[in-house]
Length: 174
Image 1 (cartoon, rainbow, N blue to C red):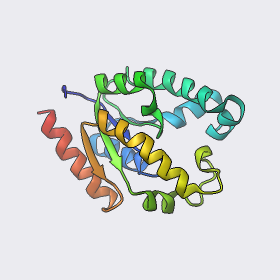
Image 2: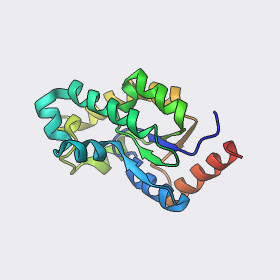
Image 3: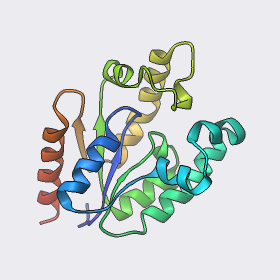
């Protein structure tokens, strides 16, 4: 781990990347970015629409370009999309440019948090729990392979999660 001004959050949808990211940014007085929101702002349409017209592959291409741009900035907190780590280029550029925190969360807690969310294309399925389990099995090794720090966001209040992340971040950056 090299010294870094940037903090990047990775983890499954519903793990708390946006919530924790906003709190971290506020505490550190840094700008906050959400790669999915940045894609929506750039394209003028929401993620489900991109999935509908371009498929997951088209979305991943847009995501990769956005992550490439955002990681060139200095002194930011970035919440990545849950699948951003699927592409090796994304994992590489995140590792090279920031302190990566894996927000880990149980399948049950994620299901609870995303139950009523219609803006998550990968959960528009007969069995969302099974889908989350599949995503967890597929992505967990990738999250772990690039994370500098891992924390379970399903078992403590977000302010405590933020405190633990800041402790570790300051420790590695002293």
